[in-house]
Image (cartoon, one colour):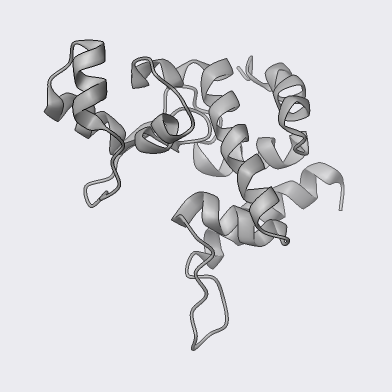
Length: 157
């Protein structure tokens, strides 16, 4: 069922990220569903769609739509995969070792950028750690809370 679980420690070590954090993100993002993908209708950030479409023999619309989807266990956006250096077909991100590698690479960069793990988690989900001025909470505080709760439970806290 979770044949992807043994992949996490090695990938987490490669990027110096706590493997339990990766597992928590996986469970919140996809529930452990290897084949999870989701089209984000309002997605606005794209990475060289014409270039990748030509390189991969796709229509421009196909590449653009693929970049507007989140893929795999960690639900990494297609355009983020491109930003991280993925040059192959985005559907391959559904393969656990690829999706976990890209998602872990992304959270690793965010953990280096932000001092607080919660800021990195908020940014992983929303692009930045946006805080609501009125409430003082993350705009995506429910997501951050679910990941932190899963993370703490895996750590035995």
